[in-house]
Image (cartoon, rainbow, N blue to C red; front, side, top):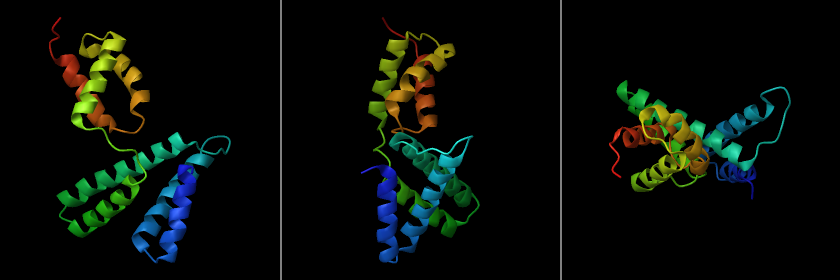
Length: 154
């Protein structure tokens, strides 16, 4: 079942179960998907990968809000954002752990032939399609920087 269709089905189930948190979160996500579909010069249907990118972006917004609310001492709002993030995370692919990410970055560095931090763009170009929403961009960039800065042994 396509991701968008699964979101709609789950929204209907949440409304029937009177689960306000899940229903409101899925409404927000579906609105973001619809906005993405009508953005630009011509309306179009998003592919599953594009819907997952929208979901990842919405999850990132929630994580940023959690940090902001926590630092401002607004724990009740941070808790709401955590709950929404948990709902969104159900639809995202499993995130890579640090060891898996490091292995993928090493392989991408070898594939691109990068030797210093100036070649970070080349590595990211090779790596980004392989990750497909399974790791946060900031985490990936930090790992690439770390590995490119480390002295290479032959």
